[in-house]
Image (cartoon, rainbow, N blue to C red):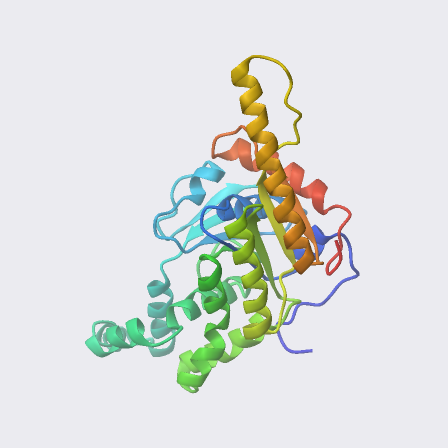
Length: 315
């Protein structure tokens, strides 16, 4: 067994299986509720003594609203119950790699202020993506941002679908461009992390609508073609309730009819997705709650129930 490889324990339900990893990448088309699902998973997995970090790479910062905490601003913010949050500027990670390997302050300043270094960081393919994964690896090894305790699992609120595949493929790309030196060494280790389904998992989030389902199907093809792997779970978010329009007032009848029609669309797209994906699939309803902690709490209970009878690789 390679050093740092997570030991596989006897299979439990799918939620327990997901929690045994070091990295869980949550991705999906923009607007499908990816961040809400990432926060929900983070809250569910941060229990039984596990320390979970919810990592955000979007500079606009939105996850803190879902957890009811202050914005991260690059720092680790405690969210209670073993869960914490960090918004990560990738450039800071690359600068830390330079500091770690050079150590001498005058030399570090010279490199970080060098135009050559700036061009290298901005232009090298996959380097910023590598920085994100490198930060994850350092966290689970107990280095850096988690000064107050070890991180067992990082839940990454990843970029939209295609960009997430590029992020996961970045270590392999970087090794081909930069085979030696500190960045080449880091890329080699991260390529092993991403390729190991025991340590790294993928959760895809979608809506049961035509375009999000189509993008999810394309994600399955990309993951298989570029990384030779499948997601561990697909979460279908925001499903309309099953209603039967009743003869009430005209406005209520029309509203119910609209909901019935949208649910028919949901069901048709769910059937199309299931034709392509035979693995674990969890359904979450649309809830009449604003974005915030009550929404995450309600979805956490529903998602836990949905995953209770699932095991990895089988719905």
